[in-house]
Length: 85
Image 1 (tube, rainbow, N blue to C red):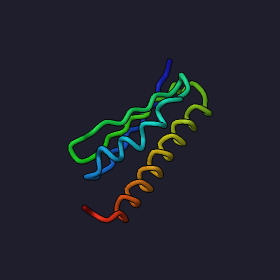
Image 2: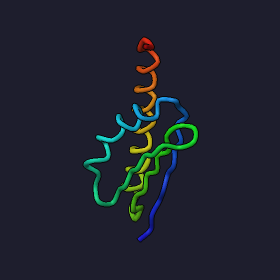
Image 3: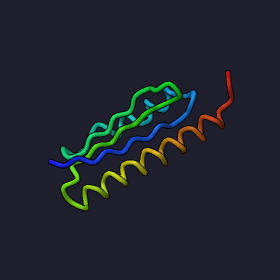
């Protein structure tokens, strides 16, 4: 089986909030796809791996990566709007 992997690192000080927002998306992934996010030295590191035996699966990889980036930006933008305690 041939696998394709994409990795994205999101620099943020809101690590726990971002990880919590990304967690629900990892619950119902197809068998040919795995997505994991974990803390890194500068924020959150996400890795997406897919069985890329067909063009549709490569597109799934790209769409999943796009979704993580858009969701992360939205969450971090919203956290920036919240008043600090």
